Length: 238
Ligand code: FPP
Image (cartoon, rainbow, N blue to C red; front, side, top):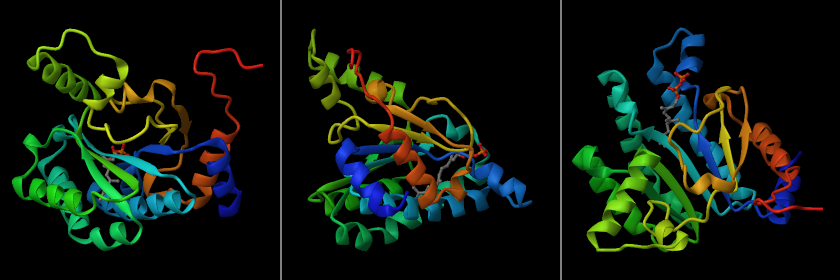
Protein backbone atom coordinates (compact mmCIF):
# COMPACT_ATOMS: atom_id res chain seq x y z
CA UNK A 1 0.00 0.00 0.00
CA UNK A 2 1.14 3.55 -0.71
CA UNK A 3 0.72 6.60 1.48
CA UNK A 4 -2.20 7.71 -0.70
CA UNK A 5 -3.93 4.38 -0.11
CA UNK A 6 -3.20 4.59 3.60
CA UNK A 7 -4.68 8.10 3.75
CA UNK A 8 -7.82 6.86 2.05
CA UNK A 9 -8.10 3.87 4.36
CA UNK A 10 -7.58 5.97 7.50
CA UNK A 11 -10.41 8.29 6.42
CA UNK A 12 -12.80 5.61 5.19
CA UNK A 13 -12.32 3.17 8.06
CA UNK A 14 -12.34 5.84 10.76
CA UNK A 15 -8.87 5.17 12.15
CA UNK A 16 -8.74 8.05 14.60
CA UNK A 17 -6.41 6.80 17.31
CA UNK A 18 -3.43 4.46 17.00
CA UNK A 19 -1.38 3.29 19.98
CA UNK A 20 2.08 1.72 19.91
CA UNK A 21 3.87 -0.61 22.28
CA UNK A 22 7.42 0.14 21.14
CA UNK A 23 9.13 -3.16 21.92
CA UNK A 24 12.45 -4.64 20.84
CA UNK A 25 14.97 -1.84 21.33
CA UNK A 26 17.15 -4.02 23.54
CA UNK A 27 17.14 -6.91 21.04
CA UNK A 28 17.91 -4.56 18.18
CA UNK A 29 21.04 -3.35 20.03
CA UNK A 30 22.09 -6.84 21.14
CA UNK A 31 21.95 -8.10 17.55
CA UNK A 32 24.55 -5.47 16.74
CA UNK A 33 26.69 -6.07 19.81
CA UNK A 34 25.76 -2.63 21.18
CA UNK A 35 24.62 -1.59 24.67
CA UNK A 36 20.82 -1.46 25.11
CA UNK A 37 20.86 2.37 25.23
CA UNK A 38 21.73 2.46 21.53
CA UNK A 39 18.52 0.60 20.82
CA UNK A 40 16.56 3.24 22.71
CA UNK A 41 18.38 6.05 20.94
CA UNK A 42 17.54 4.59 17.54
CA UNK A 43 14.05 3.84 18.86
CA UNK A 44 13.58 7.53 19.67
CA UNK A 45 14.46 8.46 16.08
CA UNK A 46 12.02 5.82 14.83
CA UNK A 47 9.32 7.22 17.12
CA UNK A 48 9.62 10.62 15.41
CA UNK A 49 9.37 9.09 11.92
CA UNK A 50 6.45 6.84 12.87
CA UNK A 51 4.31 9.55 14.44
CA UNK A 52 4.99 11.89 11.57
CA UNK A 53 3.81 9.27 9.04
CA UNK A 54 0.68 8.58 11.11
CA UNK A 55 -0.30 12.27 11.17
CA UNK A 56 0.49 12.60 7.45
CA UNK A 57 -1.92 9.75 6.81
CA UNK A 58 -4.62 11.69 8.63
CA UNK A 59 -4.64 9.99 12.03
CA UNK A 60 -5.70 12.49 14.70
CA UNK A 61 -4.36 10.83 17.83
CA UNK A 62 -1.20 8.81 18.44
CA UNK A 63 -0.18 7.21 21.75
CA UNK A 64 3.18 5.62 22.53
CA UNK A 65 4.21 3.54 25.53
CA UNK A 66 7.58 5.05 26.39
CA UNK A 67 8.15 3.96 29.99
CA UNK A 68 6.02 1.76 32.22
CA UNK A 69 5.64 1.78 36.00
CA UNK A 70 7.60 -1.51 35.90
CA UNK A 71 10.52 -0.13 33.84
CA UNK A 72 12.17 1.28 37.00
CA UNK A 73 13.35 -2.31 37.61
CA UNK A 74 15.91 -1.89 34.80
CA UNK A 75 19.53 -0.94 35.50
CA UNK A 76 20.21 2.60 36.66
CA UNK A 77 22.26 3.14 33.54
CA UNK A 78 19.37 2.20 31.24
CA UNK A 79 16.80 4.23 33.20
CA UNK A 80 19.09 7.28 33.11
CA UNK A 81 19.64 6.84 29.37
CA UNK A 82 15.88 6.75 28.78
CA UNK A 83 15.20 9.81 30.97
CA UNK A 84 17.95 11.67 29.08
CA UNK A 85 16.28 10.78 25.76
CA UNK A 86 12.88 11.99 26.98
CA UNK A 87 14.42 15.20 28.24
CA UNK A 88 16.22 15.83 24.93
CA UNK A 89 12.97 15.23 23.05
CA UNK A 90 11.12 17.69 25.29
CA UNK A 91 13.82 20.27 24.58
CA UNK A 92 13.43 20.16 20.83
CA UNK A 93 9.88 18.96 20.12
CA UNK A 94 8.07 22.30 20.21
CA UNK A 95 8.70 23.57 16.68
CA UNK A 96 7.57 20.30 15.10
CA UNK A 97 4.50 20.02 17.30
CA UNK A 98 3.37 23.61 16.76
CA UNK A 99 4.01 23.45 13.01
CA UNK A 100 1.75 20.41 12.77
CA UNK A 101 -0.80 21.65 15.29
CA UNK A 102 -0.22 18.73 17.67
CA UNK A 103 -1.10 18.84 21.34
CA UNK A 104 1.24 16.77 23.50
CA UNK A 105 -0.06 15.06 26.64
CA UNK A 106 1.91 12.86 29.03
CA UNK A 107 0.05 9.91 30.52
CA UNK A 108 1.18 8.51 33.86
CA UNK A 109 2.16 9.29 37.42
CA UNK A 110 4.55 12.24 37.46
CA UNK A 111 5.41 11.98 41.16
CA UNK A 112 8.36 9.67 40.55
CA UNK A 113 9.80 11.50 37.56
CA UNK A 114 12.79 13.86 37.93
CA UNK A 115 11.45 17.34 38.81
CA UNK A 116 13.21 19.05 35.90
CA UNK A 117 11.56 16.59 33.49
CA UNK A 118 8.14 17.33 35.03
CA UNK A 119 8.72 21.08 34.56
CA UNK A 120 9.54 20.51 30.87
CA UNK A 121 6.49 18.27 30.45
CA UNK A 122 4.14 20.84 31.98
CA UNK A 123 5.57 23.66 29.93
CA UNK A 124 5.30 21.77 26.61
CA UNK A 125 1.76 20.60 27.41
CA UNK A 126 0.74 24.19 28.10
CA UNK A 127 2.42 25.57 24.98
CA UNK A 128 0.72 23.04 22.69
CA UNK A 129 -2.66 22.99 24.42
CA UNK A 130 -4.52 24.45 21.41
CA UNK A 131 -3.44 21.73 18.96
CA UNK A 132 -6.18 19.90 17.05
CA UNK A 133 -4.30 16.58 16.97
CA UNK A 134 -3.01 14.66 20.00
CA UNK A 135 0.26 12.95 20.85
CA UNK A 136 0.06 10.99 24.11
CA UNK A 137 3.35 9.83 25.59
CA UNK A 138 2.89 7.25 28.33
CA UNK A 139 5.70 7.86 30.81
CA UNK A 140 5.76 6.12 34.18
CA UNK A 141 2.42 4.78 33.01
CA UNK A 142 0.62 1.68 34.21
CA UNK A 143 -2.99 1.04 33.37
CA UNK A 144 -3.90 -0.45 36.75
CA UNK A 145 -2.24 2.50 38.43
CA UNK A 146 -4.27 4.83 36.19
CA UNK A 147 -7.55 3.04 37.01
CA UNK A 148 -6.87 3.11 40.77
CA UNK A 149 -5.93 6.77 40.54
CA UNK A 150 -9.31 7.46 38.90
CA UNK A 151 -11.22 5.35 41.46
CA UNK A 152 -9.49 7.00 44.41
CA UNK A 153 -10.12 10.50 43.12
CA UNK A 154 -13.83 9.65 42.72
CA UNK A 155 -13.99 8.14 46.22
CA UNK A 156 -12.36 11.24 47.70
CA UNK A 157 -15.12 13.32 46.15
CA UNK A 158 -17.73 11.07 47.74
CA UNK A 159 -18.99 9.50 44.49
CA UNK A 160 -20.90 6.25 44.93
CA UNK A 161 -21.90 5.55 41.33
CA UNK A 162 -20.31 6.61 38.04
CA UNK A 163 -20.99 6.03 34.37
CA UNK A 164 -18.45 4.76 31.82
CA UNK A 165 -18.24 8.28 30.37
CA UNK A 166 -17.57 9.89 33.76
CA UNK A 167 -14.97 7.25 34.56
CA UNK A 168 -13.19 7.71 31.21
CA UNK A 169 -12.90 11.41 31.96
CA UNK A 170 -10.87 10.60 35.08
CA UNK A 171 -8.24 8.66 33.15
CA UNK A 172 -5.01 10.21 31.88
CA UNK A 173 -6.43 9.77 28.36
CA UNK A 174 -9.50 11.94 29.05
CA UNK A 175 -8.81 14.12 25.98
CA UNK A 176 -8.50 11.18 23.53
CA UNK A 177 -10.98 8.84 21.89
CA UNK A 178 -10.43 5.13 22.68
CA UNK A 179 -7.69 3.60 20.51
CA UNK A 180 -8.96 1.99 17.30
CA UNK A 181 -5.73 0.10 16.72
CA UNK A 182 -2.97 -1.06 19.09
CA UNK A 183 0.31 -2.05 17.43
CA UNK A 184 2.99 -4.04 19.23
CA UNK A 185 6.39 -4.69 17.69
CA UNK A 186 9.04 -7.37 18.34
CA UNK A 187 6.81 -10.42 18.29
CA UNK A 188 5.30 -10.17 21.77
CA UNK A 189 1.52 -10.53 21.94
CA UNK A 190 0.46 -9.02 25.24
CA UNK A 191 -0.87 -5.71 26.55
CA UNK A 192 1.63 -5.27 29.42
CA UNK A 193 -0.57 -3.01 31.55
CA UNK A 194 -1.23 -0.58 28.68
CA UNK A 195 -4.66 1.08 28.14
CA UNK A 196 -6.60 -1.80 29.70
CA UNK A 197 -9.84 0.18 29.97
CA UNK A 198 -9.43 2.13 26.73
CA UNK A 199 -8.55 -0.87 24.52
CA UNK A 200 -11.79 -2.74 25.28
CA UNK A 201 -12.79 -2.68 21.59
CA UNK A 202 -9.45 -1.96 19.92
CA UNK A 203 -8.08 -4.02 17.08
CA UNK A 204 -4.59 -5.44 17.61
CA UNK A 205 -1.72 -5.72 15.16
CA UNK A 206 1.46 -7.59 16.00
CA UNK A 207 4.65 -7.65 13.99
CA UNK A 208 8.02 -9.35 14.46
CA UNK A 209 9.75 -6.15 13.32
CA UNK A 210 11.83 -4.67 16.16
CA UNK A 211 10.80 -1.11 17.05
CA UNK A 212 13.96 0.62 15.73
CA UNK A 213 13.29 -1.05 12.34
CA UNK A 214 9.66 0.09 12.18
CA UNK A 215 8.97 2.01 8.96
CA UNK A 216 6.28 3.39 6.64
CA UNK A 217 5.82 0.05 4.81
CA UNK A 218 5.17 -1.77 8.07
CA UNK A 219 2.72 0.96 9.07
CA UNK A 220 0.94 0.58 5.73
CA UNK A 221 0.62 -3.14 6.52
CA UNK A 222 -0.83 -2.37 9.96
CA UNK A 223 -3.36 0.04 8.41
CA UNK A 224 -4.28 -2.50 5.74
CA UNK A 225 -4.84 -5.16 8.43
CA UNK A 226 -7.06 -2.73 10.31
CA UNK A 227 -8.96 -2.04 7.09
CA UNK A 228 -9.73 -5.74 6.77
CA UNK A 229 -11.20 -6.11 10.25
CA UNK A 230 -14.92 -6.12 10.93
CA UNK A 231 -15.55 -4.28 14.18
CA UNK A 232 -18.62 -5.71 15.79
CA UNK A 233 -18.54 -4.22 19.29
CA UNK A 234 -20.34 -7.31 20.52
CA UNK A 235 -23.16 -7.05 17.99
CA UNK A 236 -23.90 -9.28 14.99
CA UNK A 237 -22.83 -7.83 11.63
CA UNK A 238 -24.38 -9.44 8.55
C1 FPP B 1 10.90 -1.63 25.05
O1 FPP B 1 11.94 -2.32 24.40
C2 FPP B 1 11.14 -0.22 24.95
C3 FPP B 1 11.23 0.63 26.02
C4 FPP B 1 11.06 0.20 27.41
C5 FPP B 1 11.53 2.06 25.80
C6 FPP B 1 10.77 2.69 24.68
C7 FPP B 1 11.33 4.02 24.44
C8 FPP B 1 11.66 4.51 23.22
C9 FPP B 1 11.43 3.80 21.94
C10 FPP B 1 12.20 5.88 23.13
C11 FPP B 1 11.05 6.80 22.87
C12 FPP B 1 11.49 8.16 22.91
C13 FPP B 1 10.68 9.20 23.06
C14 FPP B 1 11.29 10.52 22.94
C15 FPP B 1 9.22 9.10 23.33
P1 FPP B 1 12.90 -3.23 25.27
O2 FPP B 1 14.02 -2.39 25.77
O3 FPP B 1 12.11 -3.91 26.33
O4 FPP B 1 13.40 -4.25 24.19
P2 FPP B 1 13.76 -5.77 24.42
O5 FPP B 1 12.48 -6.46 24.82
O6 FPP B 1 14.26 -6.19 23.09
O7 FPP B 1 14.80 -5.82 25.49
